[in-house]
Length: 240
Image (cartoon, rainbow, N blue to C red):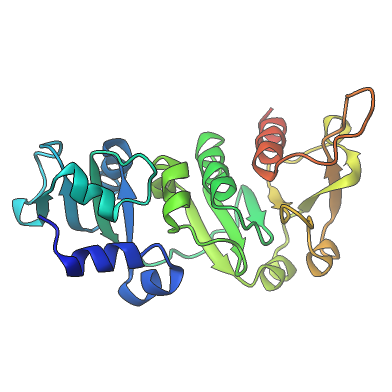
């Protein structure tokens, strides 16, 4: 059974201020929850409609009905389980290798997909400007499909961090150099900009190398690529 107070707490965690206040976030679905358990995230409570997790402390398991699950789920079609986890302490930034930096990315689905891409392409550190959407937003958590537990995501003053690095800084622009003809290094920071406005002026001034994904369409009328799609293409090219 799920109590009124539990429903109130879980639904409040859809908002960043309450996630920060309680230092909790939630994940839904067996696969996503198992990824966090395997990564040793601290489980506070598990709400489930069936016996899916046999190794969890029984005192943390709440067996609930499908109707109760609908009351706490953030999904249109709820899965079979929802888990509350404590937000871990943010790790230190290690500016080595290839790093992705996000300058004010606002869409949860985009951020979640980019985290999955970082996991796929072996990008261990993802830098986020303070304006970028929160990684513990339920939509971000679901979109990462568990990759969140394997990528170190750090929120910081992006301009200050870029000013102190000695790594080359790549920026993605419509008028940048053709990425397929550029000399790409194995180490560096790749900056991806806001969905509507691209990279901000203050960050643009710190870019060493402007790159672009060329358009091949005959009419050349496509305005831009989705930021997550662009990240996939760019990371693929850097790793190639």
